[in-house]
Length: 255
Image 1 (cartoon, rainbow, N blue to C red):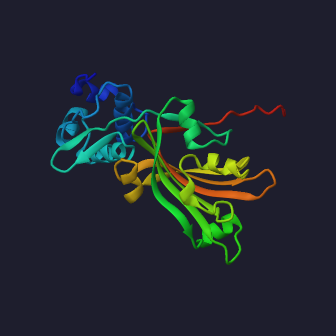
Image 2 (cartoon, rainbow, N blue to C red):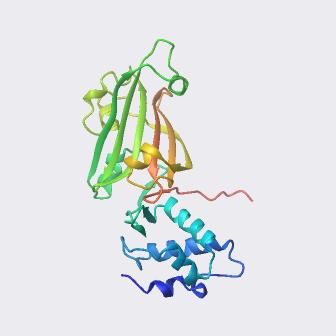
């Protein structure tokens, strides 16, 4: 549902005296308009000059605001065709309190989960893998990397590393890694996970079908058996516009 572009851009509809930098106020306003569905995907934005004229902002400020919208995956800039509203991905919520596979998460939501293999085999470990997995000097590592897709939309890149003793034949995986490990009673029971904000660039941005410089989330996880033995070292990249991580917190009774 498109509304009048001039009305959206008028300063009285977004500018506040103590609302922070003007470029940030402007980009946040356009973001809210896009996310509310007032501008359809593919809707062209006015030229930089026209944006500046209607909004009463300088072209430098407009350029900075638009660059922020591009980084957040809300608009797309193409040489020769200007700037337009990007397709908006449906957001997926993932709990931080349960250790589940991508396949399990999507199945619970009624979404069709797919994977595209990026790497699968036995390799000499990197120093990071050796340390994270506690490998001996002569050990090999199994790598399982794939693009995760839900309802034809790429959502995440998962790069998992395991000792070759835990996963001697990575080629035999035909679905969920955790389901495969469960057959050998080596499915992890707990994990320590670290989440950080990041900017998606190069191959990662291309695989996830977002503009270079878009917001993303990087997740590093080490998972364990109930005995404390390390099973898996995973480094994942998620689209920042498609994923929300949700945690349930207990309120402390301490005074």
